[in-house]
Image 1 (cartoon, rainbow, N blue to C red):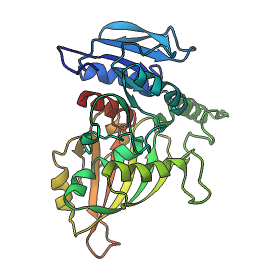
Image 2 (spheres, rainbow, N blue to C red):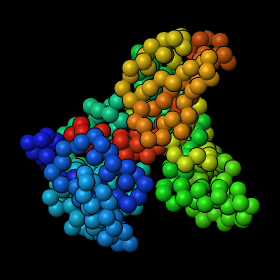
Image 3 (tube, rainbow, N blue to C red):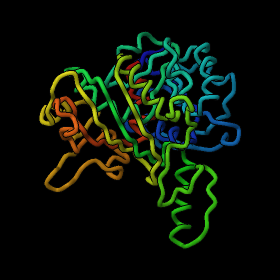
Amino acid sequence: MSAVTSASAPVVAVVGATGAVGVELIRCLEQRRFPLAELRLFASARSAGKSLPFRGKALQVQELTEASFTGVDIALFSAGGSTSRRFAPLAVRAGATVIDNSSAFRMDPKIPLVVPEINPQTIGGRGGIIANPNCCAIISITPLWPVHKVNRIVRLQLATYQAASGAGAAAMEELRESTRAYLDGKSYANKVLPHPYAFNLFSHNTRVDPESGYNEEELKVIQETRKIFGDPDIRVSATCVRVPVLRAHAMAITFECERSITPAQVRELLQGAPGVKLVDDVEKNYFPMPQDATGNEPILVGRIRRDISDPSGRSISLFVAGDQLLKGAALNAVQIAELL
């Protein structure tokens, strides 16, 4: 595969180009000036023929077929698990490295699950499939890695406040339309999500495992945290909730370390850490918010305080917000491509 250099720039494909994450992938490639020789856009037959802007030109979206990957060096997938399971192996056989945003390959022990700020060394050589983690896993644990490196986190509890963007462009539009209808006093029949969305929140709309009581989103966060940290013994519990916010997820997090730790030590570790920005103004009561995270690359971290329910002094509580479409999806994938 071609190296990512100006002398030998790769041919890059975006699969699922017209979706919410696909559009952000294209924007990230442009804004970060990714050195590519050619960008090819693919989507389903119903989206084929559409045009999307890239570097001052309109690129036409092509229908995804089994022959789409000839000459492609890096394929960025964001079209759902079934599409990834069918087409990612075909792309690899054609010579591409696949960076996949679905959950299809994340827990395969042979496939790296990568957050560049945490475990870039797992990528290894070129070729094959690289999995992009769940958005909540990325946003919640990236700020914890600087702490984990110096004082191992043994237990992690989090509650998520997940925006419509996590369910795609159709869910974002449903939130807009249902909010407009609610304010106009009109009825609205939700079609994308299982419950009324405007001025409401509900448990994440994935299947609940009857044995554990956790839904699929919560189990992803638990399992992926262990794999990304390379620590199968870390104890993790999550409660994932869908909230009526258009874009950017937030999380309330409490973690317990092996040794005692203070809020000041956590702030010092996070100050200047890659991919993280401290927003922790106690006097102004100004802390991370989705509106500030939206459209921005860093994960915002604040409300850093001692967990007073733990008398041992080993636990810290904090609050984070991050753009689900950027660091939670597209940006992380492009950063992986940059590492290649």
